[in-house]
Image (cartoon, rainbow, N blue to C red; front, side, top):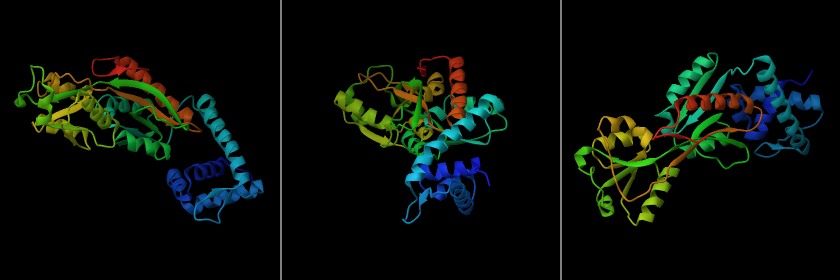
Length: 304
């Protein structure tokens, strides 16, 4: 029996993800099916690829050596499919991660465009804080992410995308607009912003500390909820300008003028290097073309 790409891919995923269960979930297969493929591959090679004596799967010396060949073979197959076989067509399921900021601004329109461009592909979207999505990307639970970046990891490819200025905004009913807000006034109101674990929260805390003020920071897990509560006058929203563009145009929210310089958010398109990189590069190219057509604006500055 010849070695097959199903066997090679199963081996590669178990080796890089660390468990048969994760590899089976990734391939939508059962654990016994994954195990059978790897046993068949070992029989064909005549060596043991995994040491199964412990609680976790570990590569044998022969397994570590074969891993580099497996990655090369999968990369060659992917390149052949894209360059010769299907001319850059995507297929199957692509798992996309997006931060709240990306998911509530330009990304929905891009996904519609992507679905039209690749009608045979299913796109699954996971929205959440960049720090969580980054971990899921590294752990191969996601294929590509539009998040605060770059991601510092040797297995991740980063493509700079855009910069989003952060602003302070409030409901007109609070009477904080149309004047320069004294820094001490910030300590008398709630500031509604991202979760504590996020880069925007840490940047905001650092910017406020540099200005010598210590307001009440209210971390909220949903960006849409931050905007809603800000509109209702619960406090000042510290948010990306792009997210409140509509509210600012309709005067539902007002920009506040202060001495504080808030750090902008830098976003990147991130995906794992390896066999799936050619397919992910197709999405990157489509995203960059889409955003170039949009052009830079005051609230989203393209930096590719």
